[in-house]
Image (tube, rainbow, N blue to C red; front, side, top):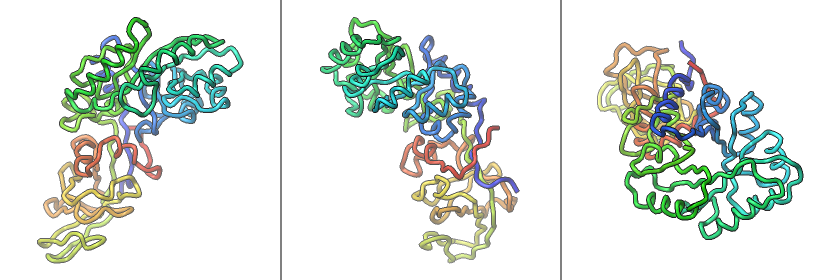
Length: 358
């Protein structure tokens, strides 16, 4: 029997997606976003598989430290910045680039002793209303950064788009307009585009792009596919059949007796459940791939198992491989069945699911 549930990672697909993104953005440099355990793909293995990335972006200090401990030498950007003097010293010690989005962070830099010169990304809030200086406060923040006792190695500017995943959304144009107005005449390197910004229709001239989801081979748009963007799935979430059941017409399957067999049926029990990261609310009829053919989930997802109707697949046996998402069954399709987004599914793969590099 194959191993039970596992996330099979294809580094070749990861590098293919980076190449596709580079072709799309032309001369812009690529900051590969590997936060949240590289969207479930493994923080360190992902970074090690991308030696051609110009930089890596993580959310928090601990993620950056793990990359440095693994020997990653490329620039590492802390997207949330730091929040204490101790974190600032640690960031200096490991040569991290910092996003500065709050006056407290400017104050930390002003009070810091030592000669370390950071690359600082000043974030402008153009409408996301999450992190960043509103345009009316940006000029004052920039002036404080310019006057630091230890001058920054470089100042760069960025913003984040709220609706880039909705094509031709008016808010994207509004945000880009606010950003361009705020930085007019400054001449600093800028970053605007995330995955949706890279592949969207809006003109987002950037010096740096920040691909996340697209890097892992999924589309950020709810109305399309990764294949249409030239992307390949990096993760294949796979498991195995661990039991076969014959269920007679009228019998039920699983918790709550949520599914009743309309006819005599063959049911495969798969080692995969919400304890592994599958959404509990996946409805009946959601497909999986068994021996290369689609078959529907029946009944409720439980902690460790799902049931699948394989009545039309007589060749299925204990040990048959199952693909829950991956090539031939895009994660975005499963996300639509679950009423969520592919980001959540990929990031929700639990720690008990081993990663296997193919």
